[in-house]
Image (cartoon, rainbow, N blue to C red; front, side, top):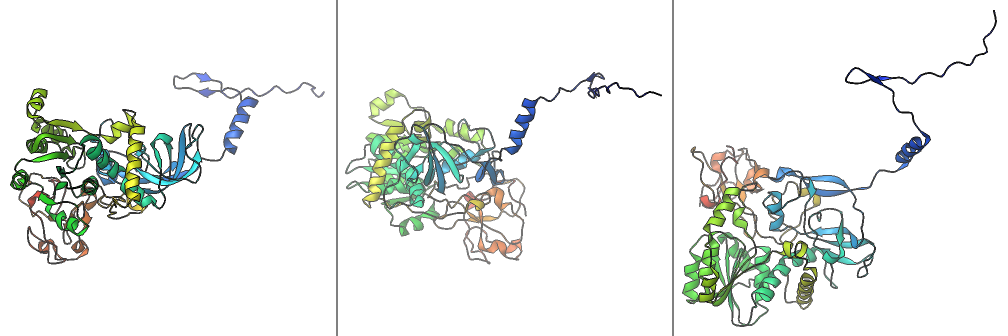
Length: 470
């Protein structure tokens, strides 16, 4: 027997079956491919940060605190380590999907933040690492880190904290543009502002009082009147929303007012226009009447549009009146007027330095609490996120009463041991919600609650149909 000297044949590559029954040979691994795979294994995973993410349009259950990759700074941008964020009414309508052209979910919420610059991108010359700034990005502000184009970033004046910055910037810049750039406020004028208890409403009242002999009429919910009076109120005449406030204004000034600032739209447009004196100006800066429930309401939008009278330019010509509008988000991101807004920011910061304006911070929330809070207590005062007037359910049930704490934007739902979907409604719990009392002991309209003593409101603040269970 002789030993064979032939070398053994190389093993053939294993063939794998495919869906159609044939077999194919896998591609051979090349050195380049092996080297690329090795580099991928050696590359560390991207750093992560916490952020407030909207996972879908609707109620509070769609707001989540999630880990997201840290942003990188691009050309013309700065990277900010966020210390405080502002919560405004615009954030509420974004959550509900009622804003125009919203991004696809999921995305990071927020339009206002303040903090310290950690990194400066190429081409940025007016900022450096360590600067204290406030920024107005288009979304993505509610995160631990945010990368923002330098044109939307503003240096803080000496002594202004990040908390003050997010209470001042958006609200007071909007108010400044309304009064001094659009309405041409002058001594001896009179103005009426809706949602006077909100962030912009309070800013309007403060800024208006920097001009001599200006009369301010404020329209807001009755429950906010006492809180406004207690907080160095700058409003001369407080009027109740839902009442015939136009008649009340006429009793005080029969000729009407010079300026109407409306953030509601709908039927309030017609009332506001009717109150204008000759040479008066009506300015729309919001449309909160189209926001109802937890999602975008096409019915509410259509109703608000239908309720507004169509004003002909000839009518304006005959009556010597003006109509105008202000949308700060469009002004910044669509119309390219960043430098125009910067001048307004500088003017507002100077007024703050001079002690002529002082923002009121209602309450602060930790980042982890944003997903379950009622959004009623923002880092900075916000336009109220209030329940709207709704039709009562057809089935006769015990309707839980909604009372409102003075100065708060959202109601407090007073129930006993009954199960109410408080988080979906966006309301904070009342003192008696933790009680073991039966639902029958809860407050009826205009009757003090037997557990906490709070007094209920009328059916105007009752729970939306289908959003409560007894």
